[in-house]
Image 1 (cartoon, rainbow, N blue to C red):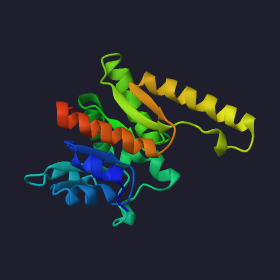
Image 2 (image 1 turned 30 degrees about the vertical axis):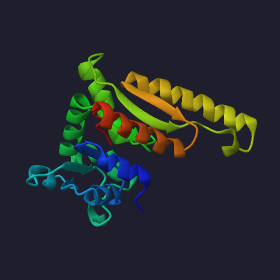
Image 3 (image 1 turned 90 degrees about the vertical axis):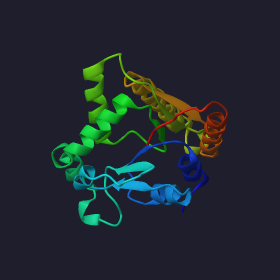
Amino acid sequence: SITANHRILARLPIHTYWTTNYDSLIEQSLREACKRVDVKTTEANLATTLPRRDAIVYKMHGDIGQPENAVVTRDDYERYQATHPLFGTALQGDLVEKTFLFVGFGFSDPNLAYVLSRIRLLVGENRREHYALLRRVQREDFGTASEYDYARARQDLQVRDLRRYGIQGVLLDSYDEYTEVLQRVASRYLRRRVFVSGS
C-alpha cells in the first residue's frame, strides 16, 4: 500500500521518477496528489508524450499489469542492454543531467551498474552528485558478532564504492528515519525551494 514516503515524494516538485519495482504505488501516490502521470513501461512508451504531464515514471523492469514484458530472470537482466536500449539511454541522460535521490535501492541491479560505469568513463570527475538513503547494518540483524562485522565492513565498502560514481550514501539507523529525512527535504523545499529529482 501507499506509504508516507510515497506521499511525501509525490508532493515534491519531482518531474522524473525511476523505479525497478513492478507495482503501481508511485503512480497511485502521484494521482492522489492530483498530478498527471506519464508512465513508461515499454520501449514503445518512450516515443509518446502525455500532454500536460506533471511527472514521468520510468518503470525500467516493467509493470505488474504486463508480466510478459517484465525483467525478472537472470537471462532478462543479461540481455537488458539489447532488449531495452532506449531505457538505458534515457537513464544515462537523466543521471548526467539531474540529481537523483535513491530511496530503498540496494544497488545490486546490474543494469544500473552498467549505466553508472559508462557515465564514469565518459564524464570522469565532471559528474553530477547523487544521494542514496541506506539503512545502516544493525547488530540485532545477525546471529554472531563475526557475521555483523563482515556485513558492516561490506557496507562500508559499498558506500566507498558508490562515491566512485558520485553517489553519497546517507546511512540511517532505521527505515523510519527515511520518512524523517524526506519530511526535512519537503520542509526545506517549502522554505527555500530545494529541487530533488530521483528514483
